[in-house]
Length: 431
Ligand code: EPZ
Image (cartoon, rainbow, N blue to C red; front, side, top):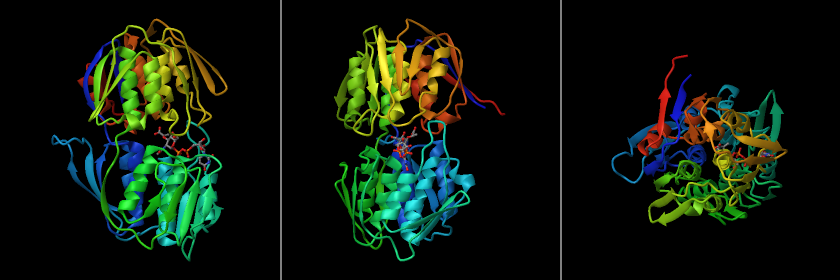
């Protein structure tokens, strides 16, 4: 398995282009199941999760064609890909495919809405928590679907089509909001979703669905109103910039010091994160086509983080900011409120010399003067990145193992970090 080697303590300076958001790309790709016409998505990042989803969608009959790699001086760095589900050939999403990536469970919405039936394997738990599916079941039930569980599969049926209705999520869920929004777009009549997730990736999907002929209002709020239509058509849509990648690189420079420009980054996608960064002593300057992040002061101030649904602090940046806090001049507190087991990085950060204690959902991080490089093991995507950030701020060499986690969600990571002066390289091994 590949590993990443980092020699710490290089100051970072330069420009990083921010990629299209992974968590917007995945539901947008799944939305291609809703129409027999072509959906062209621009700015798609080259990520393992995207490639896995391509093969999952192929199983349902989605043809995809890479139109070009947008590295030609255009503002975008990703790929332009055409997805076409002219004919759905299979309404079953098997365990072997769904287990590879939880978001593939979301095909249940479009398959059910377009075909009147979907048989999708239960996704199972994962490293960051139990991640149940009750909200998907309840919200699809509200649209009139009959749902059974059989041998590890959810069997959802709506032979006469889905029926628009009212549903208030008892808890905010990104995935269940994506699914209900896609399903309700093809339902008969009007659907009102309350306590919908407001993540920018939800708005990106809603805007794309509207371009495909859906009638969704309330975009960006917790109340979505969807007037069902009988069919959707093709369109072209550009994936929004990745706010988690933006916050991650910002945390890198906050850790090492330096001055970087995050091209395409948008401050409106991560206001709370930028507020926390500012309290750490990092400067943020907004420009028309990106964000400039710099830290010249030698001291990192302690931070206070509490994760929450958007517009709160994203759980997907919690691990990276904990890495930053390990070198702060004082005590930081980090509270995780979304997932019950998202502190797996704590133990590994401790191997580098961090001083962290966890009490329930809160981590207390006492900043130390020095971290020292060591071999560490990535446990999930964002946790892996916290180890890279800690490695950048450590003396000596840090060796990050199980980097396949990183490949799921950070496009061209070593290339981007090397380009701004980090001493980082991948060692490829065949086993
Ligand atoms: C999305 O996951 C993201 N994934 C996650 O990013 C992100 O961490 C998460 O939202 C929270 O922001 C993608 O967009 C592909 P949820 P999702 O449903 O949709 C509970 C990353 O690193 N819940 O909003 O699966 C659940 O257990 C990933 O890129 C139920 O109780 O998250 C959690 O506590 C990892 N019942 C909370 O809701 C349900 O039926 C929020 O989860 C569904 C969820």
